[in-house]
Amino acid sequence: MVDQNTIEATVLFHGLEPELAMDLREALAGFCEGIQAEVLTGGYAQARAAIHADKATIVFCGAKPETVQDLRRTNPHASIIAVSRLPETTDWLNAIEAGADDYCAGPFESHQLRWILDGTLSYSRAAA
Image (cartoon, helix red, strand yellow):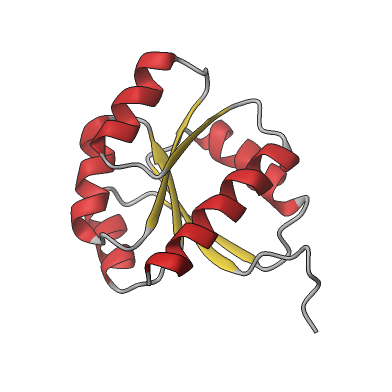
């Protein structure tokens, strides 16, 4: 039986610096037992292949607009969350305008990530 507090999702990390990816993974592990996280290190080709094959429910990626646009074109149905080390307003706006579903910045807190994932996943289910 799955706990009500468990989110079941396949999460990919793409284009994140290793320390940032590790911090994010630790924050997610605090409440998301059902999440399978895979860090993509092979560049855009690996990310495109994984997302195109519907391996990802959620993609946490770098906040560069080109990254977001490329991932959005690859699979318009994946939830894309842009990630940055610092909460810069310009990065946030550029990522959202490029097609990200949401934006988060470190340091990561479990309750904030839970809120983002709940919103992103409920929106994705409603759109399906």
